Length: 123
Length: 182
Image (cartoon, rainbow over all chains, first blue to last red; front, side, top):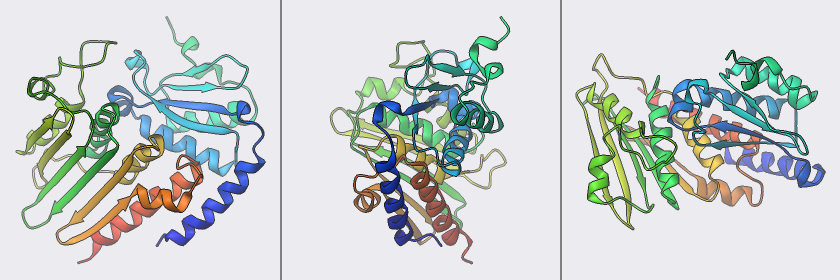
């Protein structure tokens, strides 16, 4: 059974990580749409996958956040990735499997997964 | 929605939007009566009596991007499908209570699903709000209070992935422990 002592150990590990993080401007933001439309389309497992993979790969310069409805409900779950100094990339119709690929290709290796982006949707 | 915990996540977002400082979420199972009570209580800005009536209507919303709002209507439908009810109590400046009763033995009862995930998503994404989650099966109870977590964490953010994963597992294990006792 998980105990609060374990949480204390995790806190200390997280603190150590925070001090090794370069300046805060270098943080990449992953934002998941979490309004009714996003949730109904499966945004929660997508967000979980992101936090899981980010922890597993020890990506200290990435934060996960949520947002409301941005008006493209038919394309939910939608995830926006903003790297410092680069244009925002909007991923649509996301799944946990796609999330893993985005973490590996985009967050780790810096190559956006073009075929999952809103720009790749057939008009 | 595929599971009720998603409805709870959705309805609780309304409490976040209402600038609540404290949000209490309850899931109370009664195995003898075969009922589940889901409650979302906040101290946000509250609603007028007109808004309380209107919020059950899918064509009512406060947002401006479009003219429908489905959070509460979907929750109400999920409860009523099982022969249950949805109640909303609210007062401007005091807060809002949304309470839904489900009959768990009804064929249309949607499973509660992953409440741990709902609570952690809410808590980690809204660090300034105190969330209290109470899960009860008959007379056994588990309470998760983000106040307690924050005291331990200090300045470490709750949305740190390792903390989020720990909180999810912590709620899950403790909930399971009181569910499975015979």
